[in-house]
Image 1 (cartoon, rainbow, N blue to C red):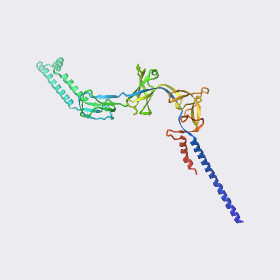
Image 2: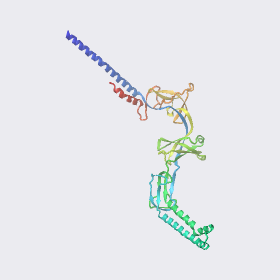
Image 3: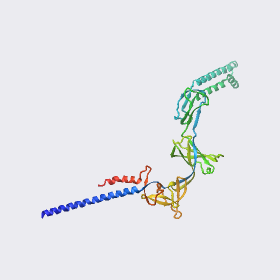
Image 4: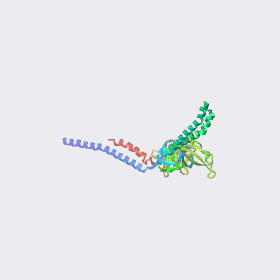
Length: 388
């Protein structure tokens, strides 16, 4: 009898243990099934790129071309003839205003200064010889007119002028930078003989750039001084530079029927004098508009729409587009309700939406090509992994 009771208790305990173990097994299976379904849903989701709708100013523009120039571009020439003794720069060197660049042999200029000083001394002696005897005889100081005549006869004014010229030539024997800039060209070498007026070097100021943009005559009234300009170049097509319209010149070319607009640029390290650029000039600014990227708008059955991402699904929203500048397009209020169907911050799809259907599952990729939803799940995974 006791044996039977012991056996029954043992069987009951084993059954309870098996029942207790079954619940975690079922929970693990459910978790695995959930992860499997999530992975399946992610694999079926289409990768897209999106950008937020926003409120802002819509800038309508005129597109044209222009050439970069520098207001500080100087070809420095030898102002006196001489032999080059020192070349202190190389092409590409940055120089400061007043910095010595090329030095001529100073010995001929030093000699000219000493000769002029000697000529002044001789003229002063002749002047004294001219007025001293008469003053000793008359015991009176010479009149002012007498002094002027004696100075002129002694050649003192011309001697002083020659000394000033000699000192000026000595100063010009050193060629200095007229402004801060970069050496673009060097045409001489040490020991070379240069004549007055011969080009020595070229210095360019890269911090004082402008663009001369050609504007067709029918677009000229739209361009205003102070308007924004966006400049792109072949050197950096994905790095636009922004400037301001400084002037709209009055003359129109009779052949091309185009005028010119001057655009001032900040120092940027991208544009260089001589480059040709694409220029987008501000023509009209429409303030406080609801904007979406122009490439987000497509048509279905002749009606314009955008895809808005909501709960990882692409939902199309019919819109009434307004004016566009090719980059942004304004969204107008619905004609019946007066409500703009797209809200600021809504993610509208700009890539991968041409073949989408309404309510299709999507995953939005960031600039690195990685899904934002995957990043979010990855951030939560350590917490779930820590569960017992």
